[in-house]
Image 1 (cartoon, rainbow, N blue to C red):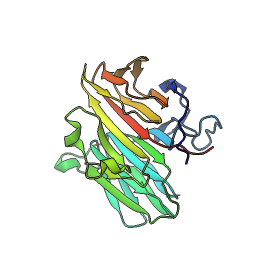
Image 2: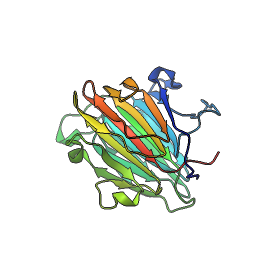
Image 3: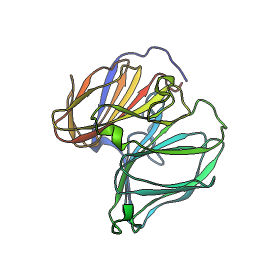
Image 4: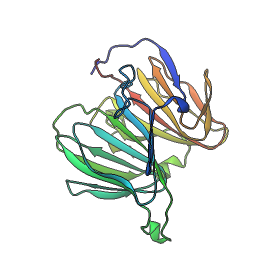
Length: 257
């Protein structure tokens, strides 16, 4: 990892520019190189290697598969997702509940649309699950695999930029799941029309509009699926044009190329 001061840059990536994987049960849009969608000029930003915008139909999902030496954060926007892994952890992830899996020295897991279960005691549902999955590198390789999930919905009601997953010391004691990288934090904001938040000031930021429409100070409108990569700059305001949800990675180091 490198922590040198980078050159200032603001790079807007539109939703339609993303490579897409489409099969009968999955619609996955990739902000960075992923699988067979490889572009040597688009492998990461800061410490963020993967930001996949996934929709999985009812009754389907990712069968058991391996991961290693990666911090994987999953944020559900609609529907629910069931997780099971080889360390015995399992859980149902839904909007407002953050989940982190530390792959460490090796883990197997599956992720499937949780349709057909009784959601909160209600009726079974058959809607797609829509979620964003993000990967950052850990500080150390070969750590013990781990899992954490935490309900953060209450904090998001305030409308501010809420730390959801963080390895930074300043978020110790905050309502955030912990990731094993002391230079990275994920923030989420749910914005009403006209409501705004100020972005952190950091060497590297990644802003993703998960739903709705916002305006970025100095750059103009951003729609669902648009992303912005900030280098050496921050502090701009993001304002909801309509009800919106934004995901912001704050990173104080970057991968060495």
